[in-house]
Length: 344
Image (cartoon, rainbow, N blue to C red; front, side, top):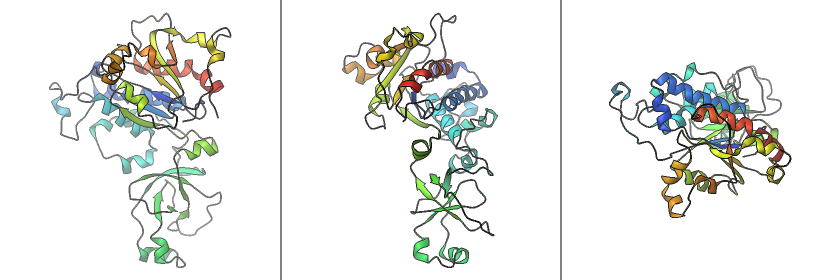
């Protein structure tokens, strides 16, 4: 993940079960997820990791039997980690794709009431962009292909996939991709004219990172779940891992010290993948204590895990800062670091 604000930055966030539980209704639980999603979009975050700090127990809450229905139950009470991952993934997806990729589920019932993320890849039907997100549809049969393009033979047709990218015309891309698969598509500069909307545009399936790396677009965030704090780092999907890490705590150094000329700001190295870790109300300390891997390694506290240990709001007037509040504070406070030290 590129580490500038324009290209995005890795973010690890944990919304504890106790915080979701304190939100007594599904409406409030959904709102908390929406606030985090808005922060991710505004600050061009490329990855969000929801990790288990070991403080909550997944359970079927007897106080809310109306939300239980087997695998299709509302998980805001029973499994808040899954609930957050589910909502964040749904909100990142372009609106026209959601009906294809997300079956109806109680977790998503109120998502339509949230403010739109309106990210660059959330294109409208009449917008034109070199890249689009789409979903593969049932492959055309040989007979259909012959009617649409007589010069295409059956063998060539079967090597192509049709992708719905939200335009009046489908996009034809090689190779064959299973139906209902999300695909990033690069479109031609000139799609050509056609008198029939049935004629597909010829495009190319590309890596989801290409719009950011080659064209400079912010192209949404990936969502990853981690079973523990240590897994956030050890299961990193980027080559070389995270090369600049920040842990957040009210016991850390004031964040504004990073912007002082006499501070260690000049010592902050350039980086490719920046990680910011937020804890729940009880902080990251409880996550370290509950992590068996870290305990076996002899890690005494979370400060030992990060390059920088920062206090996002020195002199705070409330006893606690909630995770959804800390995310906005942290991304704003470290924006200058990301802009000045991140490799483009």
